[in-house]
Length: 46
Image 1 (cartoon, rainbow, N blue to C red):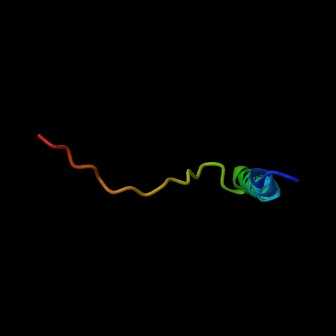
Image 2: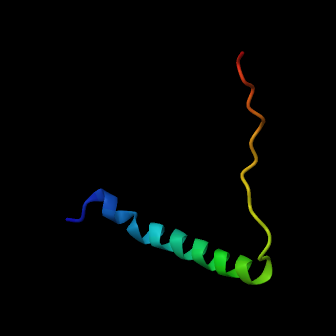
């Protein structure tokens, strides 16, 4: 029997493939755009 962690492998491969195709698309059509994750400013304790 296959271990439970191996059952998610095809989904993982699919996600990697989609990310690679998105990167190729963005490199071709939007080469100077950087997708950033929005973060709120960090408050420093003094």
